[in-house]
Image 1 (spheres, rainbow, N blue to C red):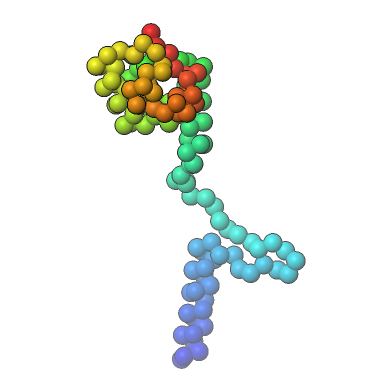
Image 2 (image 1 turned 120 degrees about the horizontal axis):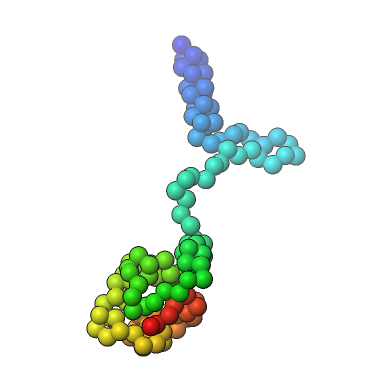
Length: 122
């Protein structure tokens, strides 16, 4: 009876390992087999996300004084908080220059340089 239970436990363990992505040891001289598939929700790195955002805008320039929050969020490095901050600052006083994003402490000079080509002030 104990041998039967041990055998059944081994089978259950082996099936569980195969189902969960373990394909077994590699054959001599061959690379190990893997059944790993990246999950659908694998997070992107920040850089990949930024490129995607910039690609969505294409060559279209965003007017800082008129853009909606969702449009501002499409800019690389601009999330909901910074978009709200830009909108709040322009309500106080409309932007006359892109460099005001730095002087008003919304963006660093480095961050502004990354998106300067996608912005305009009118």
